[in-house]
Every structure is written in C-alpha cells, then in structure tokens.
Length: 203
Image 1 (cartoon, rainbow, N blue to C red):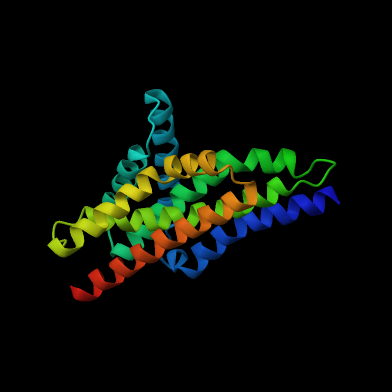
Image 2 (image 1 turned 120 degrees about the horizontal axis):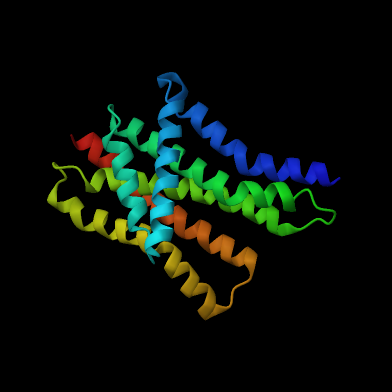
C-alpha cells in the first residue's frame, strides 16, 4: 500500500512535467539538454541565493533571463526551455527526497498529495514567470505593455512573500493555502498568457 501511495504521489508530481515537455513540442527541437542546462543554472542561482540570503526571487528572474538569452529560437521555445528546466530542477531539489522518504512511509499522509499538487502549481508559475521575463526584456516592448508587464513581474517576485503573509494573517489551513496559491498563480498566468499572445500577434 505504501508503494502504491508513493507511486501515486510520484506520478502526480512528475508526469505533468513529462507531458508538458512532450506536448509543448520541446522534444521535437531536441531541447532536453537545454532544459538540463536551465536546471543547472537553477542550482547555481539557488546556491547564490542561499549565500546572499535573498528575501525575494530577483535571482530567479536573472537566472531565467540568462537561460533565455543563451538559447536561440522563437520566444515560445525560449520560454518553455527555461521554464521546464527551472521547474524540473526545483522539483527534483525540493520535493524528490521528501516524496521518496515520506510517501513510502507506513502511514498515509495528505501532505505528500499536497506537495505533488504544489509542484504542478510551481510548473505553471515558472512558465508564467519566464514569459513575463521574456516580455520585460524585449527592446521593442510597446509602452502600453510596460506597466502591466512590470506589475506581473513584481507579483512573480513577491508572490511567495505575499502568500506567506496572507497565510499568517488569516491562519489558513493547508488545503486552503494550496487553493489560494493555485488561484493566484492561475490569475498571474492567464494575465501573462493574454499579454504574451497579444504582443506576439501584434508584431
């Protein structure tokens, strides 16, 4: 039973990454090693963040920009390579060991299901963040896009801090926190998608 629970948590956490990689067309571009390079950049940035004890995710923005600037191709390709590599490295580094040790335990615990759902929210968050960084760093970004893109960028940077503050103020339970995180991430992602699509089609 514990192995079955671990298999469920593992599939729930990792299969959306595999499906996103396959269905986004990255596999057709042989982008696997580009994603691995993005993951290695993630590790380097996290070490720097720990060293500097940064309170916000500015280093993530710089790291994503670095990965995208080193890849040639369309904007969609750059965004997906950076986001997939970044999110997968974050998943492996922060959730692989707890899932391996905890979800195989004797007792069933919902926190591993929640951790798996949270990894899917992180994937969406990093795709949206990479899209916002890509739009923000474009030299031909129209003036009408600058304010909304800057606001989205600030939300991406301070999202974790604002979520933590929100949880402490309202004393939310773990499932409610997950729901709020999903709603906030979904809203940021839909706004990013809307801006990205209108920007790409306007050029």
